[in-house]
Image (cartoon, rainbow, N blue to C red; front, top):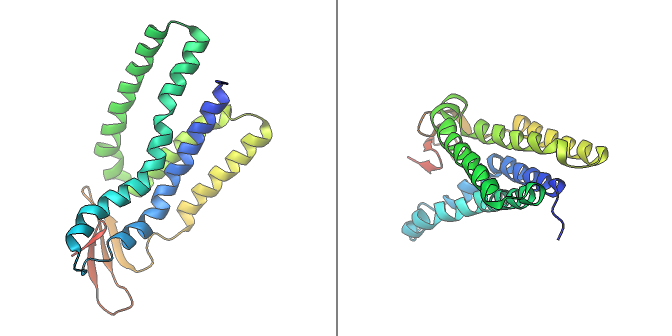
Length: 193
């Protein structure tokens, strides 16, 4: 079994692309999951809807990103030896990263930039970290172009064409939604009021 930093970079790059997909597909997925509010099975929709949406949106990116720590531990142990001290240092850094990854977005980035931009920013950051280690110049150039396309998609694809007005508050996204039926709806995150 081959262990290399190039494979680690590709895992990180794949995780970044999957993270960048989340804000692009979330509006469509969430609307399709929660469109059945008036169905007789509203309790099932309210209970299973968020579960299904979370698994579809975050399942694969979290799975890929979850492989990085064990793979990195194997790579570092192979290079430096000393499994105990290497794993201790790696998991100490992982704990610091987890604390920063919990509090920085929650307390600073999401209130300041919004959820969509924060997820996009972290996806781009992961991709940029992985680029120098991807391999040949041709592969790095191709990976860079794909990352640029994903970044441009976030800029060019409209967030919601039926929104009359929308903003992100500290707690949630609020929108006035005017679909073609002539009525206006107050939309809080994915739910309607």
